[in-house]
Structures are given as C-alpha cells and as structure tokens.
Length: 460
Image (cartoon, rainbow, N blue to C red; front, top):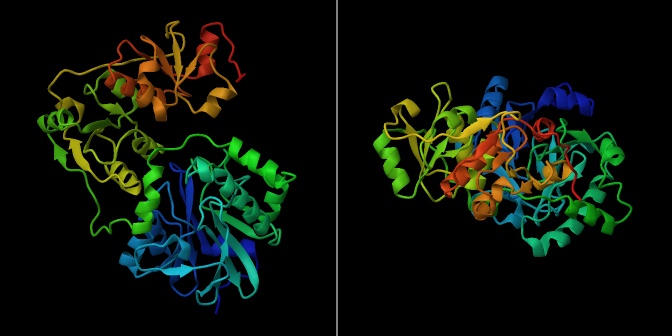
C-alpha cells in the first residue's frame, strides 16, 4: 500500500522527497521514499555522505539510482550506490554506459512498487537526456528534469562543442515545449540550480511547477524557436575546464571506493620536493591568511562552497597536489569535493600547517578600497558580472582563463573580483607566472569606485 501523503503532489513532496542540495556546484540530488523501506536516488554525486545520512535517518535502503544524463560537472554516485546498497542503476540507453545498468528509452517505465518511473526523451542539454515522470497510477506526482527545464531557464547546450550548440538548443526548445504540456500543478525537480555552471540563473528557488514556469520562464516566453535559441545561446558564459572530461568518465563509470579517501601528512621537505617535481600546492586557508604568508608558488583556493569549481578549473587532474590548511579546517571537505570532480592525485597536507614551513614565505598585499593604489585594475569576474558594472578602464581577465593570459596583466595591478577570494586566487596564479608587486582588493568594485571618485560603467 502506498504511504499516506500521496493524496496530492504537495503532500508527497513534503513527506517523501528529500532534496539534497550541493551549494558549491549548484546542483540538487533527490532521495525518494518509496514507502516500503526502499528509496530511489536521482542524479546523486560521488559524494554520497548526505544521501546515506538521509537514508539512514528514514530507515531506507537505496534500491534504484536514476541518472537523467551523463553529467559533466560532477562524477556520478550511481555506480557507487550499486556497490554500497545493491541499487539498480537506471539511465538513458543512448548513454552507452560501460557498467551494469538498466538502459531506458523514451516511454519506458519502471515499476518501483506502488509508484512508476516513466522515461521521457528531453534532449538538449545532452543528446541522450531523459526526464523522469514519477507516477502514482496514471497521475503525475512530479518530474525530474535534470538539465532540461530548470527554474526560470534551461541548461546550457554547448558542452558537446560549438558545432553542436545550436542543434542542441533547438532540441532543448522542443523538449521544453513537450514538458509544459504536463498539468500546471506538476512539481518540477531539476538537477541544475542557482550556482551551476550548467547555466542556471541566480535565485533561491531549487524546485518549481509547470505552471510557474509557464508564467515566469523567459525562455518559454519566446515567441518562436529562433528567438528561444538566440536567448539561450546568448546567455551562455564560460564554464570550468574539467567539464570536458567528466562526461566520458561517467560513461565508463568512476572507480568504486571501498574506503573513504583521506589526506596523508607531509613534512615541509616532501611538500617542497612535490613542487620542485612539477606538482601543485593549494592553500585552502582564508584569503587573508594566505596574504599574510604562504609557500612561494602555492595557489590560493579558499575552502568554501566553490572550492571544487576552482580546483577543477585551474589545476590539471594529472599532477599531484599537496594542500595547506588551517588548524580548524576539516580535511574531509578538501578530499570529497576533489574526488567528486575526479581529482584523486591528492598527495597529502602539510602537517602542522604554515607554522611547519621552514623555508622563506611569500606575502601578497590585501587591502581595502581606501588603501588600494590608483593602479591598473584587473577584474577577474565572469564576463556577465563585468558587463553588469565595472570600474572604468578595468581589464577583464576571467579567473578561469587567467593562466593562459597572465602576460596580458599589467605590472603592479590591483586585482579584484566581487569580494576578494577569487582575486586572491588570481594573484596567486599571476605570481606563479612571475608577476610581482600585485595588490588584491579586499572589497567590492563599488567600494573601489567610491574610494577613487569613480562610477561603475556597464558594458558598451
């Protein structure tokens, strides 16, 4: 018998669906209580800690792990769930995954025991993309839309190359027009949300309804297919470099972990040898701590929600990495975000932190707007942020591409972002490339402009 709470869609979502939000990558996975001690997981990442905790609290065993598409922004946890709980992996047949799974095509149904999961072909974000209708008999409770229909937008269509972008955008148009034929009160449970580089707009809402999207989604308001395509494609910005390789890793299947990964302790000599041999040192302490003293050649990537994004954007996955952390920082929050995006060559961390470093330290000026010099201004924010308003005369060099354009940065520049964390990362990239005398702005462009008698300018 279905559990109570299935009488209406809202009651079902409140009682039987657990969204698991990854604030850093901007994605949501879902755990669905099937009512008999079993659960369905949808688009779970390789970091399954929160999902396993939620399942244990409800006394559930994950019996099914559904995948809407081959993810580019994180490694899937579906194969790991198969190992951990015996879950059956449900995934698009057209994805040709190289590990045991049940391949689904448009219209295929899976009996979950009281509920049914129906696959709906919704290509656009990727070729093989499926959405999943969750049905109670013939009644639709909701739809898992992955990277198809998302809150007030649709996911990007350029991940398979510039030559496929428009073709996939046109497929995305047809997919969304098909999804909005569902009843207006149908719950929409997307994977990609605010903060995702798979192209979700800012905002706090992670789920929505078909009716709300018909009213509010600017792409659905496009009068025709050509306008839809233009609006979608024109809104695409840059995305992390590691996206280019995760699709294939997810097709083959990430390595199954038989124990939780960890970071061994390294002494100062081992860290120095790693740097000398072409490895990387990543300092995860707050920007102010890095500025006050750091290992020469280290990259500053402060440990925060966006840590994995910048690790994967700025470093190769093929080189060993050592970390410098503060005494109060959780090493698991370094390891799991790294593993989630396929970074496993983690050599360890400097035992004792910076106090254990016995060689010379480097420093970086980190100043407030009123202390910042009137010097060339390098804005490392995303192009869309720069276009919304920037310091007059500012040179926009996006952080993600900065290593390839370090020679374009003027000497003695003020390096800035929206607050200071990305700017400190940028300064560390430039210092590795040989720049000296940089100043990092500890503040906002508005504060800098006000302190120097300027007004922000929009894009021309």
